[in-house]
Amino acid sequence: MFKISGYQVVTKLYESANSLVYRGVRELDNLAVILKILKEDYPTSAELTRYKQEYEITRSLNSNYLIKAYSMEKYQNTLMMFLEDCQATPLNQLLIEQHLHLEAWLDMAIKITEGLGEIHAANLIHKDINPANIVFNPYTNQLKIIDFGISSQFSRENPTLKNPEVLEGTLSYMSPEQTGRMNRSLDYRTDFYSLGVTLYELFTGQLPFKTSDALELVHCHLAKKPQPPQEVNSAIPSTIANIIMKLLEKMLKTVTKVLGALKLISKFASSNGRRWGISKLLP
Ligand SMILES: Nc1ncnc2c1ncn2[C@@H]1O[C@H](COP(=O)(O)OP(=O)(O)OP(=O)(O)O)[C@@H](O)[C@H]1O
Ligand SMILES: [Mg+2]
Image 1: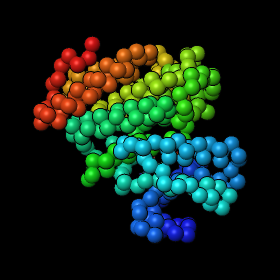
Image 2: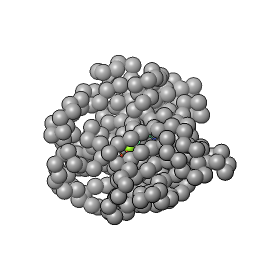
Image 3: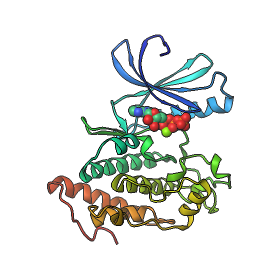
Image 4: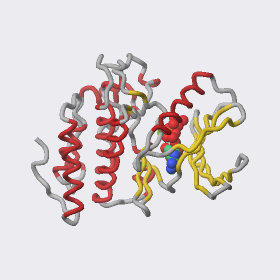
């Protein structure tokens, strides 16, 4: 493990072509931290700028549902971010390792939606909502959205046509407009589509579109309707299934209704002993 003064680096959590993520402890006060490092020895100035932007965006947000950033430091020729550690596990890992009750996923769905609402309230679009970018601690029930690496201010940007291999974001969860094939500007609805894919996977255990072929996936997002979640898992209450299908609509118009429905479910769940079967929440 590498050394960094003032910190004890405990475990490596993740490594990709661009990033290294470690769990560690700040020696001064024993604070648990996540260290995220831009990996290259000689990053380009564009990479450094992007990394700084990720840090600034993370730092600007203040919500219990969003990961906090403590500081950023130079590390050799590159940069290192120190982030909040709530001893949580990413949902993509929980999906594989744990067979959680529907109620547990519902509780998470509500928290993810709340977190997303706070991102949007800050005039930001996350652009990479997927289970690897959401962490949950089952002991404390804390849930946090992480990874503001490609997030941006809401600016009516119009994605351009790109080879699907180089699209920013995670293709299985990507909205039709974010693939750059709809000639439509991006707004917060792109995150709701990715939320729909994420919830579909949390509740059914599988993706709405299972192919790993990039072009075929893009085509599915643009043109295909997924199999209704209840056909995959009949235990899913129809209210939840309807919300998921609504989020996965190609041109979602009624975001407020979907949010309203999730909130009503949340209220119902806490006041009625978390029973199911709420009907007529959706139009
Ligand atoms: N606070 C955290 N708690 C638990 N795990 C974390 C945390 N932060 C990051 N991780 C782990 O590290 C992984 C990568 O972190 P993150 O999503 O921030 O990097 P990334 O920008 O996606 O990296 P890259 O783009 O290089 O793939 C996460 O999917 C998760 O597994
Ligand atoms: Mg990520």
